[in-house]
Image (cartoon, rainbow, N blue to C red; front, side, top):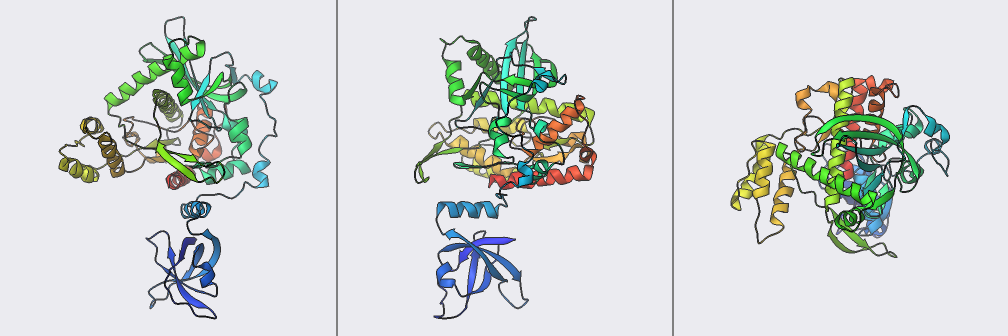
Amino acid sequence: RGYCGSLKPGDRLPAHGAASVLFVPVERRYPMIRLTTRQADVLMDKRLVVAIDGWEPDSMYPHGHYVRTLGTIGDRETETEVLLIENDIITSPFTPAVHACVPPLPWSVSDSDRADPRREDLRDLCVCSVDPPGCKDIDDALHARPLPSGNLEVGVHIADVTNFLPPGCAMDDEAQRRATSVYLVERRIDMLPKPLTEDICSLRGGVERLAFSCIWEMTPDADIVSVRFTKSVIRSRAALTYGEAQARIDDARLNDELSANLRELNRIGKILRGRRAEAGALQLASPEVKFKIDQQTQNPLDVGMYQVMETNQMVEELMLLANISVAREIVKHFPSCSLLRRHPTPAPRQFDPIVRAAAAAGFEIDVRSSKALAASLDGAVRPDDVYFNKLVRIMTTRCMTQAVYFGSGDLSASDYHHYGLASPIYTHFTSPIRRYADVVVHRLLAAAIGLAPLPGSARDRAGLRGVADNLNVRHHNAQM
């Protein structure tokens, strides 16, 4: 592999001929690398990629060779490229073979799609999406409506990506390799080609799209009576931002069907969130920042904290419920080859840093269970410091290991538990446009409900383990 960095300044360079210089990797855990180059003076202010050729037993440093120049140190695009290379993010263009898998534009739902007996026509439902401003890869939408029984029907509708992504095609192989879309400031590196992510699969407002729907019957108190899964055709009434959806909920003058449904979804979301908290789910701080960008230079002008609204939490709760419901369904049918996601229970000693820090500040952190920890975090508040509790939660998050993907056949059911969500089982189903894990789960669910055969690769436990390992590495790298 290549290493990004720059030449060590201060080395005396000869007036003519090759110079022996030290290269300093940006990642400090790697040693400096000895290079011989005739361009040392030209390269001194550049970010470079260097490869290691060997390391002699009697040398303090390995020796290597120059590969390429990325750009000038401190340049925004150059430093972004360094980050991407160091985190092994795949940025190469999609190949012609991948593009050949994408249906031509313009694309629309066909008569055969609507007539497909395996797909329900749900275009009459008042469905909408709620996303951050500027979101183009819309992969989830929601609906709620009253039933004659007095109960509610609540639905989560997810882009039917696998309809366009058959197993083993060139686009599927590339999506599996990339594993996830990567989001940067003002830039997105897609797992799938843009015609799919922003058009064909995106659940945009006012157009018909293919979906995979998870639909519950609930009591008014959000107790689940039943759940069913179906491929569907939907027509989103509106693609809303979190702010727009919140404004509809808060404005009592709005009594249209969409606003009323959003209020009902928000009410259900609050009940679900309360139940998760009661079960011991952790509300850990994951602060997101937003940048104001100069439209001409693309340089950042300002930075601020992302404002979390009730609608953010509403969508989160319904996505969590869909993921949990799907996890139960696929494991019921495929107990040995389902792709799940677990968050291992941390050993008490992992929390020692936050326990000691909190004690020094006069607070006790109880780590005997996730519920005890959640209560301790809620109590770690300083009235005169609005950021103190957020800091405690950030430190707590850093004490824990990350959640990971795994094959259900590799662990006992008691080890499926997701500690942070306080859920005995969990998977990812709701973002197939940007996560390959969800693509795998869509195929498992389609097979579970008899809509498609289970791909042969899905029964390969060793192969599934390899997919999960790559997902875990790529997901970690994308967090940078």
